[in-house]
Amino acid sequence: MDDWYVDDRCTNCDVARQFAPELIGEVDGKSRIRRPPSDAAETRRLHAAVFACPTRSIRRRSGRTDQSLDPFPMELDDGLRICGHNSPHTAAANSYLLLRPSGTAMMIDTPRWSAELADRYAALSPVTDVLLTHRDHAAHGRRYADHFGARLWIHEGDLDAAPDADRVIRGIDPVEIAEGVTVHPLPGHTRGSVLYLADDRYCFSGDSFYWSRAAGDLAVADSVTWYSIEEQAASLARTAGRLRFEWVLPGHGDRHRLPAAEMSRRLRALTERTLQLEPRPVDFTAVRW
Image (tube, rainbow, N blue to C red):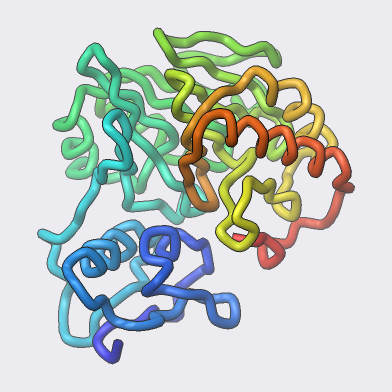
């Protein structure tokens, strides 16, 4: 424990705690090391936290972190990788690689920009599309899309955040954008928020909802709603019955897997809870991770 520490740049984004909750906890609104890893598996989880942290705040007193222990892109499921290397310019959002049967991949939101990282992701599978869930996560979209020779997607409601997008999602109706992949507009967190549903298995929910470890359930970050919590509730009410998935894969907050029927039940319950919410001032400290 004396070797590892979290420096004062920590922004309490929760990213590191998602990867190693048994080793890293929250104390006074910051991440802190609970204890050192006790075996090889815990050491791997700690290093995932190290290389995901957007402020590079998890450090060793005894020297530099071994770069060979960087696990990203890291497998979450057969067709799914998490990119790690979260960026301070996308509010520390998680990003993902969705592997397709064709041998290609789609990137959902983006990690920090680095040509070396981009080459690493592309070496896994050629990336054909960069799918942005909303404006907060758009910072590196164009650079990754250009590096990959990929199409950049965003909803018209957030188009000013990526005005040079190659594909613009319009309206509120779901649209199949590739075989097995459908975009569902969900205005609320921002005017142009969307989620991407893949293969009735993966739900890339952006910041529309997430898995809260504190609640042990799906949750909305109503204290960080830039556009309208009423619109978000209406979006969920309109969309929840159309969604079938096992994995919730948010930009912020934890990811989780449950049987599709159980996820559907929880999403309906979340919709009912969200319909009861009222607007409130933005308060990042009120989010229940």
